[in-house]
Length: 289
Image (tube, rainbow, N blue to C red; front, side):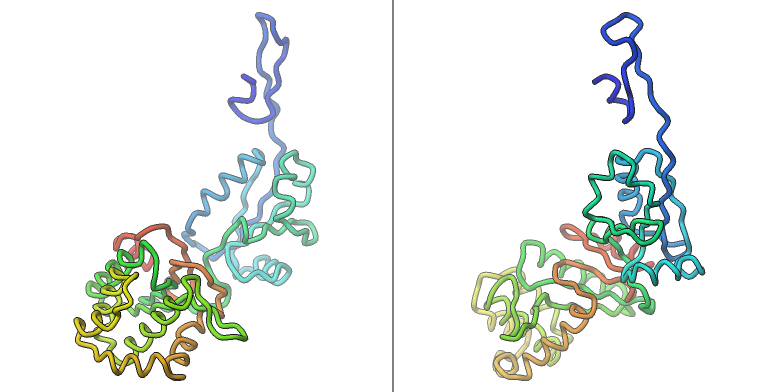
């Protein structure tokens, strides 16, 4: 047991004797090819590679530019949608730890392609980078909603050139839209899209008011306090027009296959899922502001 404390592969020589000692074998070198944009700063990448090294101590990462000949070749072979792409050399299946990741890898010629289910991914392949653009995927109910909206409102006030768009987590099926919070949240999602369309300058006031009173059905009080006509919003929300606004609002969700939130798409090409309420400084850092 003592010989396992300082790293894997340790064995005890002369056990239970005064001259007993630990002997450690040098880990076998194992290649990891990482395909990513040149000079990219990637969220949680260091943490993921460190977790792999704990399972495979001899792991040697080699970073490949996604736009290089080798990078493009492997992106075609894996049909990956997100960067970075992690590829483990085939001989990794001889290592003891391979059983721990076997169900999350797929053999592609001489390398195992690591599934984004465990590797993650933050940069969408083929998407154009549009600076000063932030898309936020979130619901209208949840414990952090008011805090996130407050931060986004302050961020917008501080950077007036920044384009912030909120996309609600409504999923359309053959029987219409569904959301995790049920009918009451779906109706609120539609009202939000109507407010954004008819009263864009009053949107933050209304959204924050409702986020602080999520359980109240008296949405019209927030509308009136924000200088919004409840009649206009109600007519929009119960009409086909309101559903069309929600459908338009969730087009990007469907395109990027985002179903959970809060999720942040930064500058139109890099995605992050953050826990809790992010700070303005954190969002500014991600946006490069």
